[in-house]
Length: 129
Image 1 (spheres, helix red, strand yellow):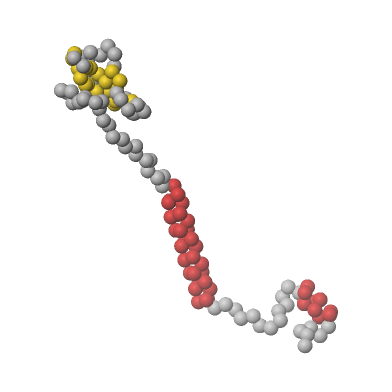
Image 2 (tube, helix red, strand yellow; image 1 turned 180 degrees about the vertical axis):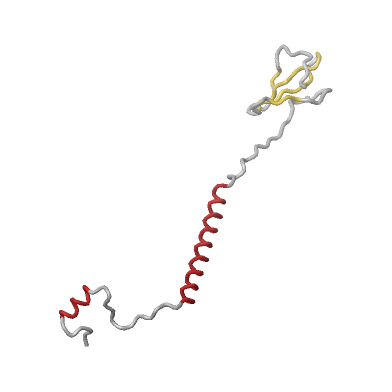
């Protein structure tokens, strides 16, 4: 069975903004409050989750890797009487006091890319402090 007896009744129902077919139950005040509370809770949870996610992405990145190396002096060498050394500002080489053959102590430069240290010329009796 059709809801409208004629096509004209159907047309007038379409143009009448107040037309309803049957009774529509009104929402109770308690039900409206419950839905508002649920919507507010969901919005708050979404906001907290968003803030936590943003905070985790803006935090410090992964730690920089640390370069470690083993330093060995040249064959038959030691750090000398002062036991001190100097590291280049960029960390690319090390200078230390070591034996100078038959003469006094000399300064030696140890580059990290070269296995053996090289003698610093004109540094006879030099001290690395």
